[in-house]
Length: 239
Image 1 (cartoon, rainbow, N blue to C red):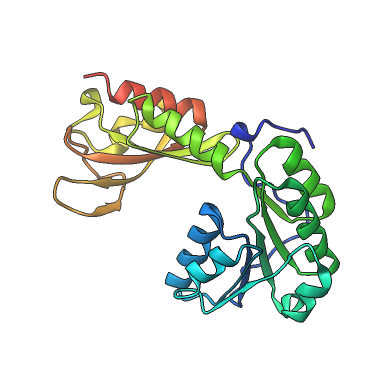
Image 2: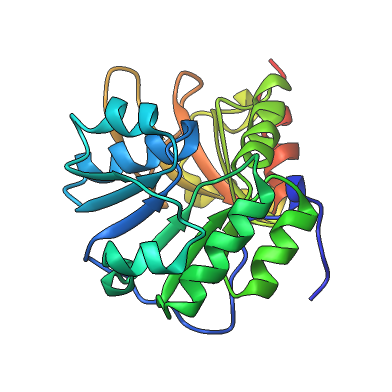
């Protein structure tokens, strides 16, 4: 598999299929990324077991995370004592201490946890995590930097990369296509993008159909290959 720079590389997938799980999630590392992940999972009614070596962070999050303990996650014996081997999904959120990140991931692999995610801060870090046996590796800082760079370009209101070369963006309607139904405009043929949904002023987003008429004050969400949606967004903002 060709290696990509983190800013171009999205979540990596193993050949092994990973089903959606509904059981407890083990979150290891309560820094900015790990704590945000754990708190959001709780809001989504997921049971979370959180581990961090720093007693200060454990105390800080104990009020929200009911299962949060201080432990050395690189120690497989400690993980076994905490029942880590019983969870289906674990996320290694350790970033700055690469050695601890890799050793923790290795311990989770040895515990045969079926769904292991890990945060990486560099390409080399991510490559090691993959080779250790993590099923999915994410680059949150690089991905956020990529997203912000697109937003700073001024041609998009939102940008979400779905894959290495596919994205969804929120933008405005080009004046040259306003006032006509989507079925007559032929955006896919002309610009190689698909309008997924549309938001009229003061209304909620709705699905776009061939009969949807675009107005210059509408917001639209389009999907397509990255270069195509970037080109379309720039065209949309030329007024």
